[in-house]
Length: 493
Ligand SMILES: [Zn+2]
Image (cartoon, rainbow, N blue to C red; front, side, top):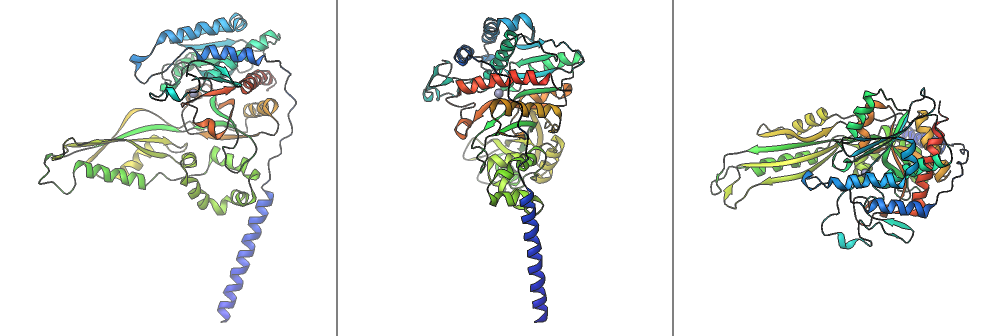
C-alpha cells in the first residue's frame, strides 16, 4: 500500500515536471522577430508590356525531350534571337556568350572587381505536354495568351519567367542609369528538364576556368507559398539551401526457366518481388535535421498551440513527429531518402517459367546519406545472392545545406520582404526535386533556390502539368525582386 502511494506520488511529480517543461518551452517558442527592412527602391514596372514580352517567349516551344532525336534546336536559337530583340539595352551593355551551342551566359561587369559576383540562374527549356492532356488546357499550351490577369502557357512558371524577369530587371536598371559595383552574371541553361548535363556544368566549367567565386548563386526552386504548409496562415517564402541526391538501382534475377508444370518453390518473379517488398518495408531511416528542421523552427511558432507544443519540444516529441511526417508522401520526402520502385519486368507466357526478372528502384537521397550508404542499405535489406544489384543511369550525391546565417542568405531574405511583403516568413528548406544549381557548388558556397513566384496548393499541379500560368501582378513582382536584389547586393560587405 505504502509502496503504491509512493509510486503514485512519484509518477504525478514526474508528470507535473514534464508538463511544466513542455509548457515553458512552448512559451519560449516564439516567432523570430525580424526588424522591418527599409522599403524597396520605387520602381515603375509596365506590367502589361512585360507580360506581353513573356508571352512571346512562351510561344517558342523550347521543349527538352528525353529522346534527343526529338529535340528541335532551331527553337532554342529562335529563343536567343527573341531575347536580343526584347532586351536591347542589356544586349548592348552586358557581355553575352553562348555556351555549348544553346546555353547563355551574360556578364554585367561591376565597377569594383574586388567584390565577388552574384549569379542569377534560370533555364530556357520546358517539359513537353503530356499526350492526351492538350485538350484540358484553357489556353493552348504555347499560345502565350494573356487573359484574366494571367500569362498562360508552358514555361510561365517553370522557368521562362525566371529568364525574362531577370533580364527585365537588368533592362530596367540600365534605363535608370544604375551601374553595379558588384558583377552580375545571368546564366541560362538549355537542358535542365533532362538533367542539365550539357548546359549548367559547361557554364560552371567556363566560369571556374576564369577563377569565378560567386558571393551566391540563385536558381529556381523555392517560392512564396500560401496555404501549402499546413496550419500556417501567413505566406512563407521558401529558399532552397540544399537538394536531394538521385540514384537508380537495378535489381535482377536469372533462373533456369522451364515448364510451369514442375516449378521451383519461387520463380524469378517471386524472388525479386519479395526483395522489392523488403525494400519497401525497410525504408532508410527518417531524420529531422538541417533545412527541414530549420523550416519547422521558423514556421512552428506561427502554428496553433497544439502544433506549437509539439515543435517546441522536439526533444520529447521527435519520434511522434517523425512518424507523422513519414505518414504523408510530401512530408516523408523531406525527412528521409525515399525508395520508389518504378520498373518491374518479367515473364511472357502463362505456362513458361520466367528466366529473368528485373526491377528498377529510384532513390532520392537526403543530405547526409550518400550513394554508397543507400547501396549498402539495399544490399543489406535484399540479402539474397541470387539478386544482382547495380547502379544504372545518372546519379548524383545530395547537394549539402548552405549556411542560412550567411550574409548572402540574409540579403535574399530581406529583398523578399522588401518587395513582396514584410509579413512574409522566410525560411530555408530542402528541395526534394533537382535543379541545375547543384552543378554550381564548385564556384560558390552559397547556392540558393528561390524565384519570386507565389504558389497556392492548386498551383503545384500546374508545374509540369496542365494550365501552367503566372499572374501579371506576380510576374511584375518577380521583376522588382530581381532589380532590388541587384541593388541590395552592392551594399553587401
Ligand atoms: Zn525548372
